[in-house]
Length: 254
Ligand code: BV8
Ligand code: ZN
Image (cartoon, rainbow, N blue to C red; front, side, top):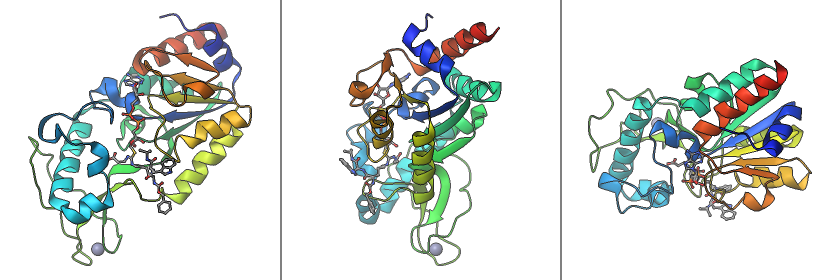
């Protein structure tokens, strides 16, 4: 695969790179994006309607069932060539890569990346929805999706255990957001990979970089709400683009 000259040129010269990823980064690992139509039990469900404190208050068993099934799918999924290329690029050491993700899966980590910030939390980090204390992992993965499943009960206060996810209308973890903002502001190049760029404040990060004159490269087969601020766009899947970019960068340094 040929790497666009403008993308290669920007990547070659950068030393401090912040990479913002979204659901598209995990698409080639078989995980549905938020835009992809939900399948099976949640076929006619808008994910955003399930990913809210209101949905949890109204029917925790329905929300817990959805997240338990997604935990199963994310446990079964494997990092793809895009995740691995980002980890290798970071290890190569020519440039410093900060990975900031909106994804709640652990595929970046399993590929070997240090993730600077999970802006929207992690599906495997469970906590009590009443006292907030961390809760232990929950038993065997589901073998098939279920409509409803009672959440575990907190051993400290008897409250319901929820996934460590940032739901719509909930504040992002302040420390993660501050780390992401600092990395974005100190970057000399920002990659935006596999995100539709419509969810805030995450989508505000590349916009902030753009306003400070930092070049932004978008890797996404589709146009997005961030394409207008991109210095360069590369309309190919991340799992094809990133390995090709890494190879081209290595050829350059060989
Ligand atoms: C908050 C966890 C306040 C859940 C998620 C400003 C303007 C407008 C609205 C707002 C605003 N500020 C706040 C809001 C409200 C809201 C928001 O942004 N709404 C949007 C919908 C308009 N934001 C919030 O509610 C945030 N909280 O503001 O709190 C507050 C402050 C103080 C005190 C109290 C409250 C919280 C937002 C976080 C919500 N949680 N995830 C879960 O996972 O279950 S967001 C969730 O949706 C994901 O994490 C992700 O961030 C987002 C989905 O977007 P993407 O990841 O981009 O995925 P998507 O499917 O959209 O697109 C996939 C892309 O990949 C596509 O472009 C596709 O072309 C591409 N692609 C596909 N295949 C590939 C590919 N790309 C590359 N390679 C491929 N192979
Ligand atoms: Zn509790």
